[in-house]
Length: 227
Image (spheres, one colour):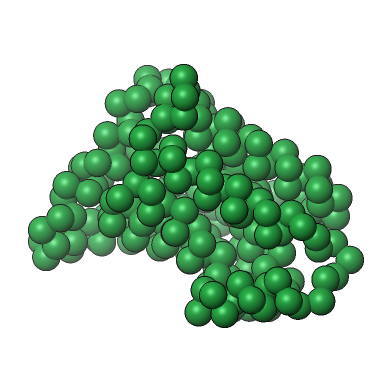
């Protein structure tokens, strides 16, 4: 499915706002996040600084190379903001309940689940709680949605339509996490990618999914950890 989708992605006729970046930037993301998740740092940067720096690079490149996307984001920030805030909060809480139930069931039936979940929370030890909160709110939550859903998924859906573009983007988002060698993290990324991807496809709002992602991250990592 992934390889077939990739062939369609590269062979389909380009549209006005398509170009090299739609193929190059996902590969760059994999090249950055693979080593980061494998070693929990990049050079002198710990995980949280490195994660934020990588996302800043990817977001900057996606916005610099896609002028129409910048216009879409500006329009998104002007329309129905109150409704998007409510839906962002609600969807984050729904996803948290999904993970709470999934974590409880997986711990009961999968012998490796507890160790994998604990390994995810080990990332919190790389920074103070204040820095984790600050980077989640200002960079990580918004940045991941601006790049993965608003840029990658939007562009792939433009070529492959729904659901192929959504499924391919969600699968690639999960595959980027393989470098962690943590099955639970990869599964979590797949669930999140499908959830936020579906929410984006329905709403076409990066603001909504960015709010959902940010709130969910704060609840899961800081407020009510699933440990």
